[in-house]
Image 1 (cartoon, rainbow, N blue to C red):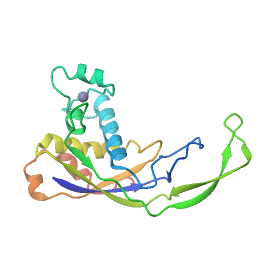
Image 2: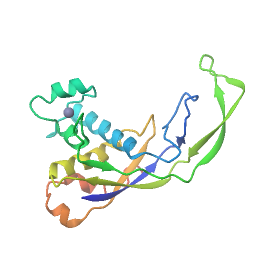
Image 3: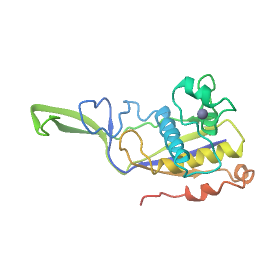
Image 4: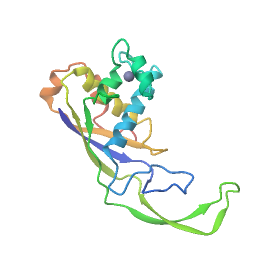
Amino acid sequence: MKFKVSLKNLNSLTVGNSSRIAHVDIGFNDMGIPGSAIKGAMRTAISWAIGNGLLQGFTSCGQVNPEKIIDAHKNGACDVCKLYGYPNHEGVLRVSSIKVDDVKVLTRVSIKDETNTSKEGALFKQEVIPPEREFTFEVELFSDDCRMIELTLFSLYFLRFWRLGRGGMIDLKVDEMKADEMKKCPSLEVKKYLGDWLWQ
Ligand SMILES: [Zn+2]
């Protein structure tokens, strides 16, 4: 099944390599926001939620190290890894990339880390996506398992309280879900919270 998700950035997002700046909202590339970055943020958000007891009924091994994942999966893969994949297992979720063509170029001043004062002559250009822009991306699930659909929706739900990149606050809503697909999964309570923006 496939569905569309709208994403709105609440603060400005920086584009390109901005390693010279102390506070980078998100470092994504010139092509926009890669699907892998969104997927990674969804995984981090849901692992955090399960690890902190905010979501019952799902398991997360919470590991990133391949050896530790294998160890944690001795009695079967955890739900988060089933959805997102783990070493030698692809997972059942795909997230499309976001194309960004609305960037502003700002001239900024480098700051000396030690003194917090501006460095002389250290102006540089930075590409920024202004706040409150809306984008869409597509989520595709290669599974009819209601639990996997539910875990995907919960990932989007908790990503709204998490962040994209470093400090990039975003809002999300699910645009369209086919009614017949939903009917097969009556337990999808969470979808009613995803129909509209959270932060407005
Ligand atoms: Zn796992």
